[in-house]
Amino acid sequence: MVTFLSGGTGTPKLLDGAAGAFSPDETTVVANTGDDVELGGLIVCPDVDTLIFQGGGVLDRERWWGIRGDTTRTHDALMDVAKAADLDTGPQFLPKERQTEGRELARWRRFSGVAEFMEIGDRDRAVHVTRTSLLDSGHSLAEVTDRLARGFGLELDLLPMTNDPVASLIHTPDGVMHFQEFWVGRGGEPTVENVEFRGSSNAEPAPGVLDALDDVVVIGPSNPVTSIGPMLSVPGIGAALQDATVVAVSPFLGDEAFSGPVAQLMDAVGGEPSTQGLASAYPFADAFVVDENDDANFDVPTERTDVRIDDRDDAKRVVQAVTRAIDAAE
Image (cartoon, rainbow, N blue to C red):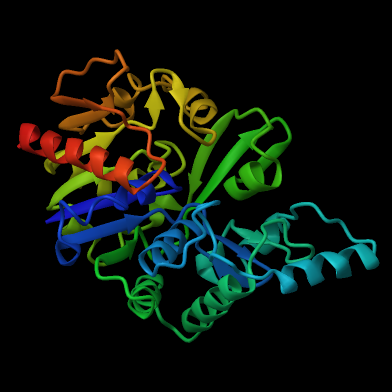
């Protein structure tokens, strides 16, 4: 039995090679929900949906989000309406007092749908409409995620990290902004002063999460701050990882991040933005998988391989290193 902690694109790419080493019916994936937003009244769960679309064989693998071949007629029409009405077309985080109104799950994640700043495809939007409708009828996020995952044909178990609202907020000189505004709306350009996981202290792990952490845990090459950090901020998850066998795959080659804003985010929270910095980011790790050209050293077993993942063969190679690391750690 194995459990993957997943956020962004790093761990999903690793999962492309997992089936050859880990049976899907003995595999659980816990997904980050700190990046979730309510956009125009719809609950959007980017990291959950990447896994659902990947497992369902419909993921747009060029972008690693959304559905392959999707149309964007509704999104385009929203842009046209906003321009015709001379409305602001940038990210519009709703006012502070509106962040705590309405759906509890959407606290501190609410954006206007005017000229939506995240491009959402039409088939993708159908998933968000369905999810939001099921949530409004009283189902939990975990229940809705399971229903959607089964509908798309996933064989592994997919769990959101929590049913409660946890918002990844980036503190910048331009003010506090949600991670999606920082990364998607503004291209990661504002200077990062700090990162906050608002709501996490009151959140609980979703049903099944702590049980899944009794198994061997693999942290893929996801962003340690905003992909894995929200999970670690939920009470109970960090403690469970202290007792688990944990293998972490580096998202760095030395001090070079493979993708995303991981370096500036780690630097902002006082971490060393490099493979070596994973020792403090994941102090509970029992083994690491790092690049063969990386000179990082740890006090726990370390497997080395080419950790860059561009296709399924790359993923299989890295997964083989993960299995060796598990053997060394146990």
